[in-house]
Image (cartoon, rainbow, N blue to C red; front, side, top):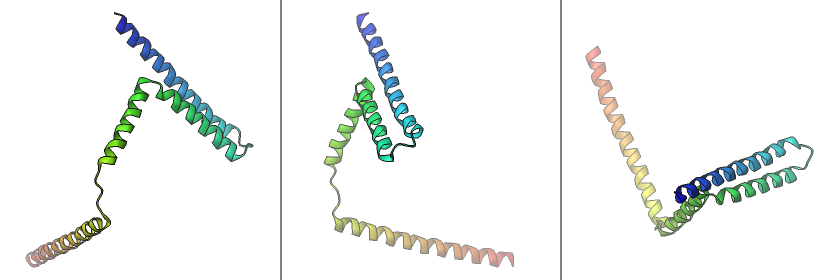
Length: 123
């Protein structure tokens, strides 16, 4: 019973945190447009601070921590990728271009033959 109550309380806390984060970001965005007399640099600074605080609050939720873990795992996986060398990339690109040209010529020939057949049959 207590684990359900703790989970429910955690969900409620997370919901409140998300609402606060959204409200802070909304307040920063609204202040950007409400105070046009302020310098753009100041307004952007306020907006970035509001965004930073909102993200910090959102990352303290369970879903926020899950998103952060996903990002970290994605970064680890990107490091494992073996990227092709410049020569491999150039060779592959040239092969793709050559195949596109070959296929374009092939389709053009088939189209011309079919056009000739239709023209001959309809005359």
